[in-house]
Length: 237
Ligand SMILES: Cc1cc2nc3c(=O)[nH]c(=O)nc-3n(C[C@H](O)[C@H](O)[C@H](O)COP(=O)(O)OP(=O)(O)OC[C@H]3O[C@@H](n4cnc5c(N)ncnc54)[C@H](O)[C@@H]3O)c2cc1C
Image (cartoon, rainbow, N blue to C red):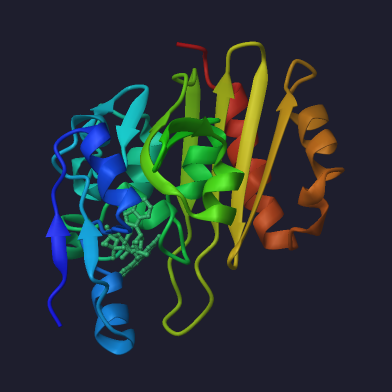
């Protein structure tokens, strides 16, 4: 059976498609195999012609933006994370919405968490802002992400072991108001924390170790420790 693919050109047209039951599709890098296995939907919609879903700048990225468009217009932590997803062919096709909402690995989630990003989601009766926890739990249609540019940020992803668990990801960002945000993907679980850092790296790390980060294995904690120490010792730009 053929899928009818709608290409709305505005948020209001996209809302109408959603109200008619259209399912969102990004680059179809994941969904195509699922559709072939489980059957095709009657109606799908791509947000690629909706301007709000195509923004790329220092403080925002649209849900329909393909991963390889995330260049130095976005903070390093997001650019570097996007650059590690799959192969070049996947990154030229896969979208921010497909990664954050539709994939199991969600390599963009830790950077989005340390940027303290807010999500704009599309519903049949309007557009609404929400947090990343709701995006992951309820899988709404993601129109885009918005954040305040951090003062500094850092990213590290370990090499994947063939057939092994997802590689560890450690991300952090320093924000105004002396705030430090950290997010770690350990297996499929993503832990995040927000703390002040005025007491210096060692005290900040001790505070952090008393949060959910206490459950991190020693090798993961070692990477958190060195990343946070380096980030907090960097001269402020
Ligand atoms: C070879 C390969 C390697 C990969 N490696 C990694 C990796 O290292 N790290 C990683 O994180 N991911 C990885 N992925 C997964 C990759 O992130 C996803 O394939 C991709 O992000 C899905 O994007 P897409 O636009 O193609 O989504 P689609 O396949 O079009 O859709 C996937 C799901 O997301 C939903 N969706 C799409 N857009 C939106 C939206 N705007 N709002 C709400 N829901 C939406 C769809 O309804 C569907 O349920 C890999 C994939 C492949 C094929």
